[in-house]
Length: 124
Length: 285
Image 1: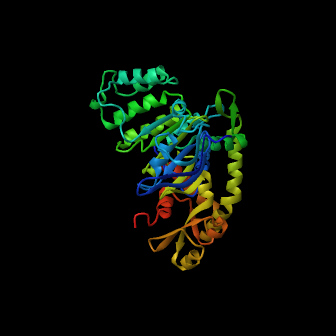
Image 2: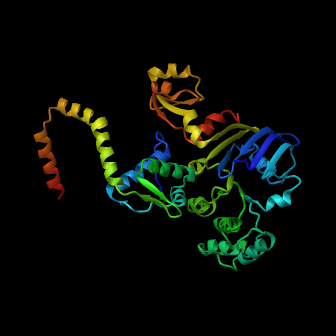
Image 3: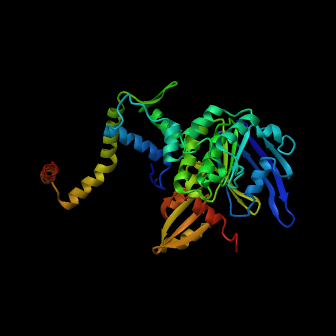
């Protein structure tokens, strides 16, 4: 597999974000094992210390737990915890700018919801 | 942790040229070290010194041994793959396996055969019938089956196509490397190994001009995309390098606080090849 890394963010953070996205998308479920450090290092051609560092951050955030001799597993409640922190982050970091922009453009809630409903219809 | 390799004041002079000029460095276990330098910078001489293949002045300890006087003992723990094919052209796969099994006390035949089973090599095949990529596969299978503590790779993927090159590093990471092993690699294909490395050494004119772990590279060096109106300010911070793209300048800085650089423009971590080009400026001039 070939992926391109973004030069402005350390690779271990990008790897961490990938795992987080996989948990949020349900590609990794609670209790699922993460691929081994060795496997990820070989697949992405990155050094194992980078992978360990990404995994360690996930452990520190209690999204992943180390089971001795077995490897890393997604913890129970990881998805819920992530949703909570991601929602908080959205409200704190993204919503104020988004809200300001909506205000500037004069878009109200009713219009937005109507657009969203139409969009869903078109897709189904 | 104790360094597996310690060099201090290492020098080597050939008749007309200095290949190593008072070089000092340490290498820790469990690292993958890239030794990068232009042609003729002294890379191969440094590796030869580590392997006890050349005489030198100064102090060098590899796994606590002196490569000049304790080479036999050292060779039990150190493996080597060079770009120069060392396997005799007449040898068959099974003869090569038998040979290493006989001479090397730490060779694991079953492991070697498992590696070979995943290639298209057959036991009766001779080296002369193999492509360059297949020869490297055989060499790698022999070397990865040896439980050595140091693996030295001198341009291991030179002349290989992209499939073989990828597979080479993938095998090393998946089936060979661990915390107790140390890999030292020289290559001109820096982009290929840049994320694999844990440490980086640049060598130029026989001197080590950069010796850092990869994590520190991102903290120490920064590339900043600066628009024309800020370029003069950027130049005052003594950039290592400056190049132009689309009416903007890309500056490479060493050791400037990132908070200060943020004011100039967008910051990126420089690639090893950009760093290399900036560091080696004027080498052939």
